[in-house]
Image (cartoon, rainbow, N blue to C red):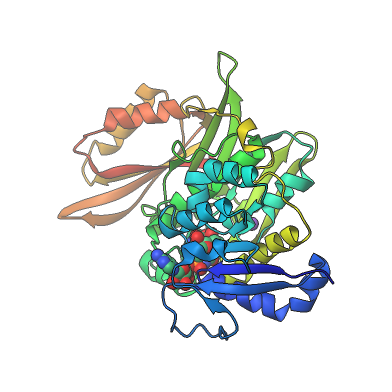
Length: 438
Ligand SMILES: NC(=O)c1ccc[n+]([C@@H]2O[C@H](COP(=O)([O-])OP(=O)(O)OC[C@H]3O[C@@H](n4cnc5c(N)ncnc54)[C@H](O)[C@@H]3O)[C@@H](O)[C@H]2O)c1
Ligand SMILES: N[C@@H](CCO)C(=O)O
Ligand code: NA
């Protein structure tokens, strides 16, 4: 068998620990499939003495992870530290400068610096791989770059954050509180070190920006991704959606369109949606992720599997290492970085669809009429309207009013909300969730 592929591991937390366990447990199988063994030369993390449940005595320790790539006994650096900037980015840069390959699960870093890093990797003619960064164990990056490579992808969307999906589906099944379920997701190792990245939709937005680039051949552009998380979703919304035949899921969606001048524009948005119970995404529960890609010849593809956790994420990291051991360098974003298109962001106003709107209103006469008048004046047509339960907001007794609109432009809903802005009848800002039917 050929010379081993020698790796250095930076970060020994949930994913790093999983990678060590996987490389040890499946060593013989991995060596056969890779054509050579994959061995660990050196490791680094913040705390050397922490008990991680794995024997690290056979690996050289570096206090300063940034120099891992400069070691002569290392061919590939595996970065499992996290953070868009800081030591992870410094490590990525020095690794490419040293002419070594990089595997990472760090979607924040790729969303912010992917183009720069891909350019550096291509200049150094080394691999830069990040299957674990998007949808954890699901091999969706490989599927887009290889299996669906012959297609124009028209649209890509899905459930990209395991923590949010775990929270929403557990609240749905058990009626338990948001904070309580979030703590459970953190204990299971799904959440980011700052869980607001999960629940505010930022993590899903990082992943969507990466997927867009690979699907559409555009430069990774995280800045314009509109992200709304799940903080404002109430148990009452989940119950209401259920009664109407929908489940609430945090959905990331991207597609390209052409503007009046014929320029291609990129639409990217993450937000909680009401997903019709006949749609396959409605039944994706727990920390599972799912991605739908629509190709112009293959049609609709659905990828589903574990989106977070040590084992699934390690599976994706080691798959990248096996590819590198086989000699696959490839362009990180499928086409050379210099050829990625700088598509301008698309506006959402002309998009059409149905929406769920929930208002928290003062419990007094005339309030409902005020809301429906704003809808009428903005041209929003209401399909169903439900006045539900009382709740105190501060010292005010309030009522939840939910409605589902007929199909119409998003700009009309925005106009209705503008007309109601500042109204003393509203005890809290309205919540809008668009509806995914098919
Ligand atoms: N946990 C998951 O399910 C999952 C899934 C996919 C991707 N990821 C990504 O994988 C990466 C690692 O995630 P994790 O869940 O294993 O995190 P973690 O917090 O469990 O582990 C992080 C590791 O990095 C080390 N570290 C952090 N900051 C450091 C610093 N400044 N200097 C030195 N060492 C430092 C810590 O000591 C720890 O060993 C992140 O980019 C994350 O977004 C995680
Ligand atoms: N925090 C992320 C980890 C996987 O990327 C999630 O919950 O999906
Ligand atoms: Na993946």
